[in-house]
Length: 197
Image (cartoon, rainbow, N blue to C red):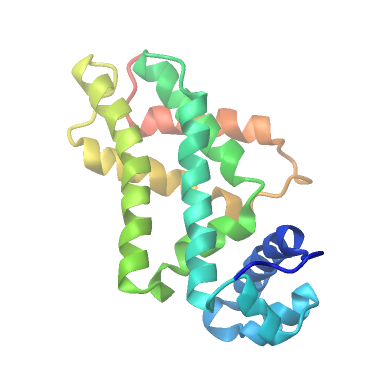
């Protein structure tokens, strides 16, 4: 159906996603209604369906955006071939991307259980794609004798686990700047992988 003249779809649709992001992260997906999202945006509940077919689609869209934008960010970040340099770049890219996106990070981990089977599989594939990029770095470093670990998959999950919680506690007005935090985590990740430098 064609939109009527003067439609505000281009500005309202992003507001719908922003409202859903805030409300899902604050109250949890299950506790938020479409009516609440509409009220947050300032539209009638019925009008919300012009921008999204249902709440599940909103949740999936938020998670999908988060992962695809992260993968794009890493794709633009990569410029080194040396595994140590690539590892340091991965840590920096991960933290630079995640620290300002606290709500999106919270939803991407805590609300996976509320995705339907098809949407869950899609997001899991994107997450695996991201993890595979790190594992490739680890495997290269192992082959070159730079990283002293015996299992690249376990090492990859250990690094991801170390990094993923950061945005839940980090505050930009705290005692550490983002740059200082990145440097600390780079050193810790090197220790996790037994980096030979």
